[in-house]
Image (cartoon, rainbow over all chains, first blue to last red; front, side):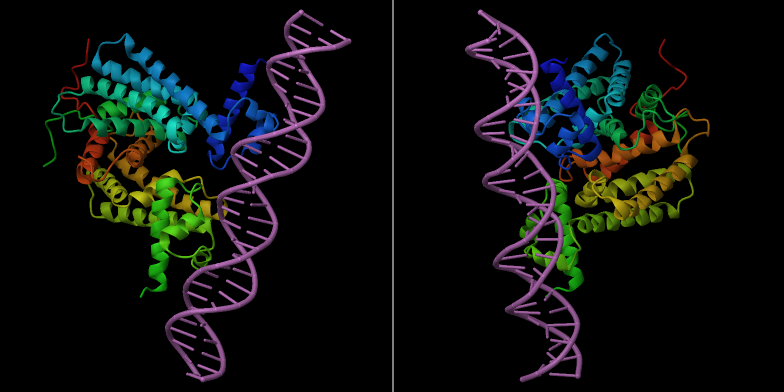
Length: 199
Length: 199
DNA sequence: TTTTATCTCGAACGAACGTTCGAAAAGATG
DNA sequence: CATCTTTTCGAACGTTCGTTCGAGATAAAA
């Protein structure tokens, strides 16, 4: 009926949904057993334990979003357009994989040891990718805004999505992505006359 | 040596630090006992239980940041300056009360029932306050950016701080606040000549 | 001093947790 | 059919958790 890989996938997808809904530590293996239909002991045939479940979700999701981002900006050479595409891809992927991305964002400190380091290597790589995109897109090297501040401000804007955004709500994912890109690049108040400052 | 209130305060402050460092669910009452010097049972004289500990931290912190924000924008009438002051106050308070604000941001779903609702009433009030500030500050009502998107993008920028920012790092809190305000209001790329678009 | 209210804490309880084990079932192979 | 591998799972183990209880210490009041 189902292959081994498909059953593992089903377990991971279900776990991601429940981790996202109730949090990693509040979710019990018995919860997952109930939701997947597998027995409590049966899940241990597919996974070493609860920690590896979280690790696999995070590692797969991070790898996917990283390679996706690289592909999204690969063909583009214009710095500003590369930044816009990075943002659109991140927000698009986030809204399309809410549960996994919430688990990735919210449970960043729930692993430890080697598993944590593996996931964090991916995170560093992803952050470095944005930093390089940002560095080209910023007007001048002497910008008044630090690169790290800009990068994490953008990540904050985008990753905070899981706390409030509803995919089925009035703002569809595409519009959300466009608006966040515009907000980050041009600001809330697009200065029509930059020389005219108050006073 | 210490009054009842001072000992409760000490318990709450210690709990906030440990909740922030290890997460609410991973922290045990025995951890708090060790950190405060009180006995395990002794803490229950000051607090109903672990949940009330989290509740008190969140309620007090939210009340403080709410009244602080109101005071910060009260005297100002210029819409843009009100927005800038709201941002500066939020970031300033956040960096000055990292542990509590991390617990507020990260453990938003760790309470339930009446306690959760009480905290969420405060959150709604705070969000509404920003929405009203934002509504006046936006250039026109027909802005291309939804009010809710703008508000939560800003909250995301600011609240994400707890995942990366180091108060003792190269960027002092004041500069961080200024840069986030500038980023949100003017964007990464302050459009020097808005009419001159590529192509 | 005796009495009363305030505060502390060692010891334990019951529940829930992640995980393990060995046997049984199901499926593939000869 | 028999044999071997893959997959399932009921039952239990050992640990840890939040919380409680009742006695003891301390301080204030009479």
